[in-house]
Image (cartoon, rainbow, N blue to C red; front, side, top):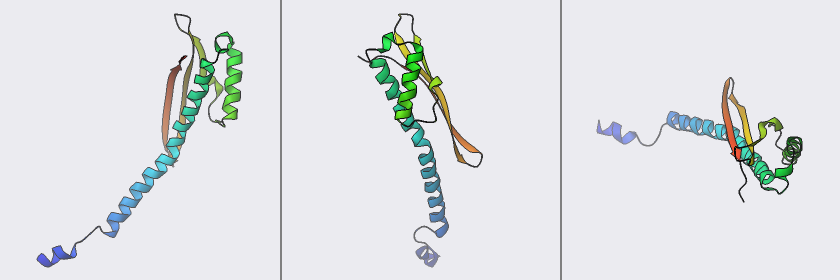
Length: 125
């Protein structure tokens, strides 16, 4: 019995293989999902810069959508439609932009991840 315990040292090949498979799957998942959140940061910054600009209060919805569309193109955000941006006013008359959209990314085969975003961007100054 004592001899068997001395021979069992470290992880087996199957233990290492399962560890590498789990780490590989998590890395693949991160490489697919993290860009969605990077794009969302860009989208939020586009809306925030527009809301904080002096011209925003006097812009029509058509002008806002045109500006958003051009800034999305400049920042190379291609998988978001400018219809996700909805200019609105609250009860006090303050103008803001509501961002509502979903992004779906395929993980492998029929497995997908979906991220839903719903935010209001208001003036910060």
